[in-house]
Image 1 (cartoon, one colour):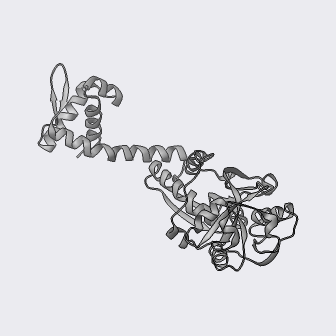
Image 2: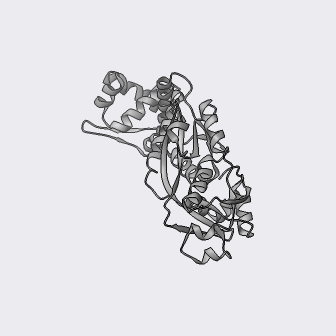
Length: 318
């Protein structure tokens, strides 16, 4: 079977006009009519009703058109992408991410990207902000979600570019039986004698700075009992009354099954956010589509994951 003849049939079925279809296909109208006659004879079925006034599809013609069209559209899309890219188009996206973004941002991004690229494949690596930046700098990953550095313009040098996503207030994270859990807000000065679970200054520099800054603004140096590199380890320590800490609201939302309460800080307004970063020297069409999707997230309040999703987090940094 001449598959070009099928392409001719699809154009006629779309236009329902031989003259218009012939013009689109750059073929003479008599030649197009002859090709359709050959196809009908080869299949042994009538595909079109033709009169001097109009062209309509037979039931068999409608069936053939409906089932052939997606295949030919995919062929044309594949060829077009190959020509535009000049090479094999990217179908896999590699994302490095901190766990809080892995729970709420990444699933939304992947879901919307798959609507644009149904054959999308992805590889996700949960890691620290510092390591994620290195992976993007080396072009080993296309995108990374990091905790926005305090000095972002200094920390994120070329060829890295970044986009900040919604900010979340810094809150006190305590067990539900801690005295502060009964309050809607608390002055951090009341907690100067408490023991704090701190952040690693190397792997979590932004959160380390925020906790230090908050306590110093309240007039004391935090008494720390330990450094927790993993969010669920920290959650277990807090829920068992071993210490308290400060966390952005988006992180506390992950811990709703750990008997942890997030309490607002009075007389102190600090915020933290997640940013997406990319290497503008290695920007593919797929990565650009991902960034367009993420632009829609700016200024939005993103939903928190379920408790079960939070329990499954295997994280290295908050």
